[in-house]
Image (tube, rainbow over all chains, first blue to last red; front, side, top):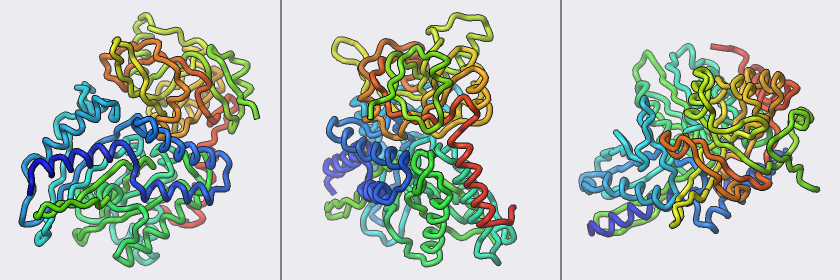
Length: 294
Length: 198
């Protein structure tokens, strides 16, 4: 593996992530505008699509808020290069200097802003070892934080899931959370749902599901695919609409990740993602080939 | 159709005539203020300190812009868009007492703000979320920045707006809120779909 090539590819992926939204989400937005019957929502969706064009033409950030960056590095026996964190931090600093990222990372208590979008634990990188994987995947995602204000987590049980009513307890919790979130997460939003593990695992699954999957994909797990579809339809039927000011599409995608849990519990984490889906990913093979995956 | 352009400072009567769903554009000074600026303003008021700006008739934007300095050292606005307004709900009365006539943001606010809108005469205006490059076209220049030590997003920016918008009246002075109406309807649908709570 050529170290400089890989470093350059990681850099370019970070810059791509902050200057455009992923193609799958743009297409879902366009489809939402085509179907929309509410005049205010039509105007909001048109503004969003127009904003993407203006940002591109003027080489500007799509959104003033850079959100919070999380990176996933998955690797097999070949491991991963030791400079991933450094390469991401360098790219964030450059993007901040150029005005693609507003300096927005602060100390959680003192609120001190060092001005460079880094700090203790930031950039956050999730390294995951996948036995047998003969490549490294690198995905970076910038998720807005108004969306975080709508997030919720609950530890369900067999009884509260309402297993005997096709998970009615789980579904009600998701819809209730969407109603409480309303316009806060910059709808039309995406929702990541993590189910299983303990609180920490469910939360991480929820972010990974909505940040690393294409919003237009179909879950290979038939049960999760059915739940994702049903929740998406029912959330949109609530009528909250783009921007939360009424309309046919408040949600573009529901993505569920699951992990085994203890027999006493069923942790569920609900994680909103604004429509400005800034993320990008590449696959790096050990023979030096690099391909775009997101 | 001609644009409904309002000019700052805004008058109480013109603001009280607005109804939810109306679309307006704003021209004149717009002040940005989010969590830290609101906290600072309230603290100054409690301590009898001097405020840096006259907020009578003002439009306050829940936003933190991306600004860059040019070669001459002057601030240039790059992009700007609304942040989530509900965080500023605890300041509903402070905003009213200052004489602010329009609050711009996203996601709407709650009952304290709706009551303050009616009592003091101000409206809540919804901007298109995540549309920072488009909205920046309505800002001509940066007049100045106060409290920059709070960081770029949290500082109080004084901006020159020219037909800034479109902005939808989300909450008016007559106890009408798009967000409240939609929420009530959505909760009814939820109860019809899944009647059992808990």
